[in-house]
Image (cartoon, rainbow, N blue to C red; front, side):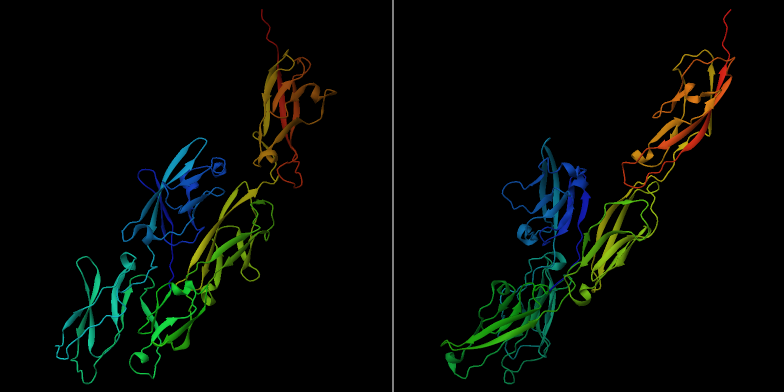
Amino acid sequence: MFGFLFFVLMAHTAYGDVSYSFPEEMKRGSVIGNIAKDLGLDVKSLSSRDARIDNEGNRKRYCDINTNTGELIVAERIDREGICGKKASCVMKQELVLENPLELHRFILNIQDINDNLPQFKLNIIKFEISESADKGSRYLLDEAHDADIGMNSVQSYTLENNEHFLLSVLTGVNGVKYGELVINKELDREKQNEVTLILTAVDGGTPPRSDTVVVTVSATDADEGQNGEVTYEFSHLSESLLEIFDLDAVSGELKLTGIIDYEEESTIELPIQAKDSQGLAGRCAVLIDVIDVNDNTPTIMTKSVKISIPENALPGTEVGIINVQDRDSENNGQVRCSIQLNVPFKLVPSIKNYYSLVTTGELDRELLSDYNITITATDEGSPPLSSTKNIHLTVADVNDNPPVFQEQSYRAHVQENNKPGSSICSVSATDPDWRQNGTVVYSLLSSDLNGAPVSSFLSINGDTGVIRAVRSFDYEQLKSLTADLTLKKTQSSVDDLERLDAEMSDSFQVVLLPAVVSL
């Protein structure tokens, strides 16, 4: 069994191509990266533009694009050894095609090796005929083991079962291949022992290391003599999946683990074995294997009913969404802690089982910060622990909570008498930090009388632009100045359904008339 941490690394090459590095054997549907984001493409247009991956010829479709999210996902099993063999670098060139207009983007998949292959000896049994007169220190070359993985995941060392007669010397050839030599450490005596059986194990350098390991040796005896007493071993009624991960030596009875056991699939395994003699007589037994869980599954974070938009007047403790965390491992390996980054007005509140509520912890103000990118981290209690993260983007919705404000405390304009009715005198301006309709202001004149006549018979104001105009022609001898009060009112909000805020702000506006210039 084995576990590993993996990272998907993305980088832009010098030629502008996007490159992704990720481990082989990722599950179908796993996310490699967001290619739309990395290429600067509009996710909303991917479906209409028939975005697809071109695999050049008849090669398998190893990856595909999710046109809803722009994510590049694993479509088929990616086996580095099957694709690139023993090459040090495993690179596949792919193309993203879009239509309307036709657009082509090249990207590169760099497949990283994982320790998914066992070291294998060419022969299950290596035999030597050694004279009992052989000197101490005599050496005998052992067959090297082969591992389909590369680098540190390939064969790095050998071990020999402890015994009093032989030592193991591990050497490195000019090509870097490790091999072993059997060295006599104590003289042999055929009369005391005519045969020595040892177990040689090849170990790779992966984390954790893997080896062609003997699980157990079954043994059956037959009271008959000669060929009638020779016993062979075989599995009986074993599924194809188990035949791929266990090997039984017909002569020695050695049961070897040759594939990967997944605790999450089967925690106990029963292997029925039968022993037969040359006449077909048979005996049966069963090997029961308890699989020990290792921490090889990262926690999975799922969001439920997450609100994309939150009103800025939401009270502390308002539930924003529900988070569910799962881990397929068992016991401590499957116990998960969930946390959120600091310095955001949100927190995770544990709920039933593996559920958390995401709630607000303080007041929100859209005018100060309108968006939050929240990172949730789930970490299990395995050794070493595995973790995963999920990003949630929340938008703060505007509430009509700010009054409009004039840019000036008072306004003063000079107008020459005998002006034309409808002529522009000046304009006023006000601002409001709220959004869209919540920030739209309407200008008006406060109702009042001037010399017994309403002020509206002297001045008018454009409610949208704030431009003030003269309604009539002014006479300096009758009216040297006039003062009007301006008001601002915000319209009913169509952005939200909250209670309307009508903030009326008054300001003064004075018009000073100038006498007419008489031309002589």
